[in-house]
Amino acid sequence: MKIRRIVFLIALTFYSYFTLAQDKSSRVVYRVLSSTSLANNPGEENSNRNMAIYLPPGYDNESIRYPVVYWAHGFGRPLEGGLFQNIDEWQNLLDKAISRKVIDPIIMVFIDNITEFWGSWYANSELTGKWEDLMTKELVSIIDTEYRTLAKRESRAIAGFSMGGYGALRLAMRNPDVYSVVYSLSPAYGDLSDLSIRDKNSFELAYHSKTKEELFESFFATGRIAFGRTFTPNLDNPPFYCDLPVSFENDEMIIHDDILDVWRENTLIELIENNVSSLRKLKAIRIEWGRFDIPSIIVGCESITHKLLSYDIDHDAEEFNGNHGIYKYSDDGRYLADMLPFLARNLDFE
Image 1: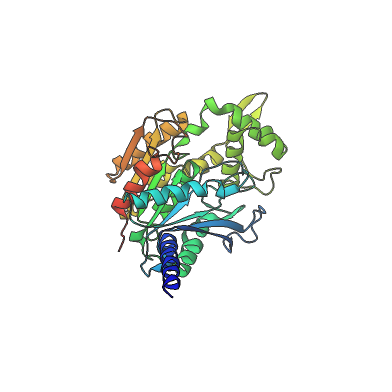
Image 2: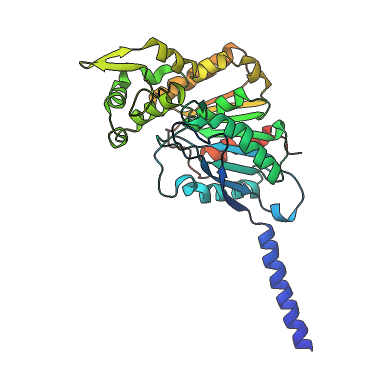
């Protein structure tokens, strides 16, 4: 009888230990969202979007509600593993940040905005679908309905890198009733620096390409087509069904002012110009870029902060000692060292 009691106590100890360990573990939920915002788009983009939702340690054994951070990823070719190739690193990073009390527990949401031409630019498009509606209406509604969130703007942030940095700022300034905090790392298309003569080659390749295979040889040429498909679609202009702000005749670049004006309207400094009152409603804005970043991004980020300053819009802006790839998940990377502390200071956790 005594031996049985000892065995029972040992088993109980192990059960309690593993239950406690499980209680302290985070988990990631993988899902597919069948988006009504993207359904039946003329560009034939897939309306089924992969999602990953990080749930913090203790989520399954508590009743508290959490702030939510929505992540906007960058532009690029779909890689093996797609959106989820870095989710393990994100989970480890968030676990580390929470255990070190860099930030209190949060929910973090990742959703695929990679298109047939590598990026949605997080904007509604007549050709590719309503990506802004996906991010600000459909997705937020699903997360608030199905998970224990603090369902208010003060407890929502959007953060992103490169194309996602552009998207984070664009979505936040146009939807201050949804998000109150925005973190933008190396945002693209801050201004029209991308359209300088220095980038003639990528526009020329984009203009002359007849197939995806030709186009995909160049990251930047693909980016031009993706931007065009988002903001200047043209169903009468195959093979990529968009207009570019330049064309070429005998190696001479010709500017098309009507298209250029639309592209200019969708740079971040012009969006700021048209959303000043909405920007003032945001609680916190932070923009970061590397000293050795892509040249047009450096110029664009400087333009963004100068534009915000011209309207006396409070924000943080920092040029750090790094390049376009310094966003890694290490202890001294921008996410753990800068993004998460910024979110911790500015999100409402109650």
